[in-house]
Image 1 (tube, rainbow, N blue to C red):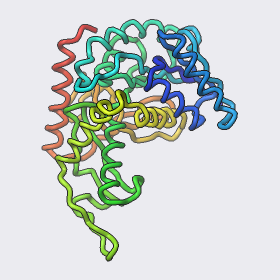
Image 2: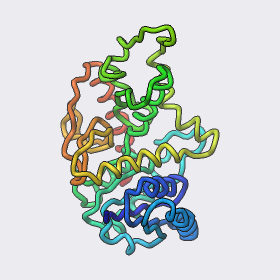
Image 3: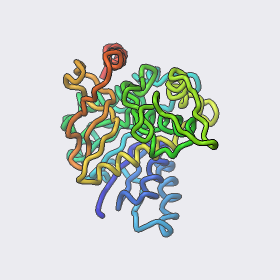
Length: 313
């Protein structure tokens, strides 16, 4: 496999993405670019020295020129969220950082697929689409992929079933206005509200939907308060998205993309189930969600639009 992935930002998230990509052998070459060149060198060297036990992967630090002909570019650079700080509080600072990166990277990798990971991911994805000149279907953010993973993990923990048997999504902003369309959530194809199991060794737990959604929204803040960053789950999430981009068979993922009239929403990036693969975005699945859920999605879009109005791109 010949696949070149450039990661911009070698902090906790960028380096963990690089490590996850290496473990999953998703690239033949990984380039780490960071303003702190020693940090990028050290992270690349540390990962590279483990590759004899993994596979023939070249991972090294570099400058923008080294990103030439990248198949995928992953943007993780930006100021990290502090304890108690919302993702949107970071907005203008990280927009300014991204503004300085866009012309440098798009010049050398105009044909790459661009994966935005840095927060606020929906705003930065919108910025990249609006200002980079890269085709819209080649740009997407990790969006609520991580929120969706947290949701499925929470239900799996609650019902004590394997995570792969839990299905459902988180829609909207990767942030406080995200929500679960419960009409789509199921365990083993059974709607969550109707799921029950017979047998002496099985408990059928009760849970509060609002508690589950609050858990999803607050997980990042809890982790940051405890260990100052989140990196493992988002690292695996980003690697999973990059893996989908390696295949000719498309995947359904809740990535942040530009909305073009779906559910009556336009000119904003947020997450709904999207068809994506090696050629980029094919389109959105217009899931048959309830009127109340459509209202929640439109509310999330409006929250993001309110922020966009206040930002200087």
